[in-house]
Length: 229
Ligand SMILES: [Zn+2]
Image (cartoon, rainbow, N blue to C red; front, top):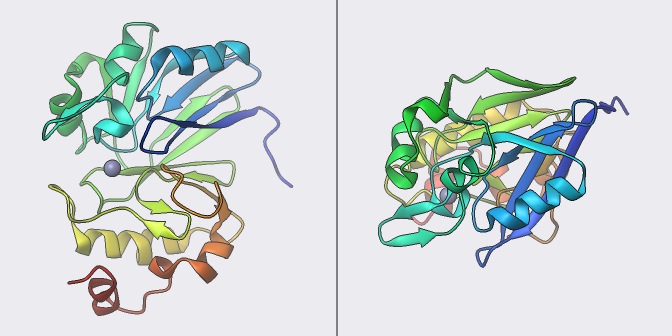
């Protein structure tokens, strides 16, 4: 129903932390971007190649190493955006206020980045990826909306949401994101989370509004109580 015939999208479970990597591209131009390409660059590039797709860069939901590689607080993850850039020609798309953190965690150079504002779009063939700023888990977290699918990183999981107790997290911003920004999206949009933490690998926002307690909060007090504050 209303599906874009040019859209190539694929979900891949990878690594010991149950991360979901996504490929988003155009079947017509055979170009795709990888969302959060951590853990295993070879495996990811082989998947794209087997599908006849060429990787032309990455979209970053946020700067944590399990999503973009690199290291943070002694936690190190293989693969990631720098290794990807050693293998393909492309750019790394990131929210402008997440970019400095991304450079610190991964060592990526400024010249390899495209710094985005909320509301920007990245075009691949006839496929338009909208970038939505969803701070809370990190200051510059992004969700990607493409053809009624929401690639949500660590902002929203099936029946859960991202941690807000990490450096750079903000419980107050996450509350705004969950009850304000995401509340504007329609029930028929499919949530594609950044980790396989839920009972299913994807879920409609309509279903999530019934089963995900973090989308059913009535007040900031509710939220702080749910988060044990
Ligand atoms: Zn994270």
